[in-house]
Length: 68
Image (cartoon, rainbow, N blue to C red; front, side):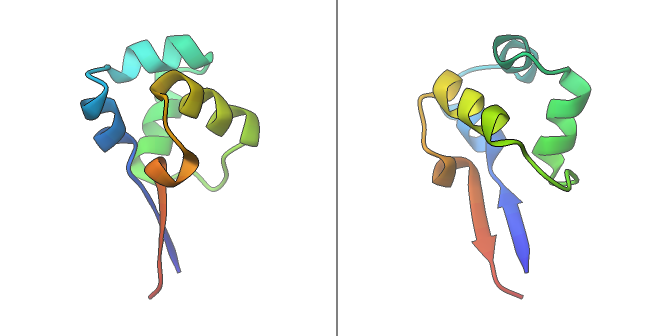
């Protein structure tokens, strides 16, 4: 089971840098980097909601499930 994080794709579509998104949603660039790399063990719904609001997208635009 794998969850794929497509945050880089959405950032590119919105022409936004990671640093800018981190400032908007109120997390560190280091934490955003962990999330982008797929190394995060969990994501708070409040963080996911803030990302979706900032990028004007849906959670499914950022996260995808791929069966092993």
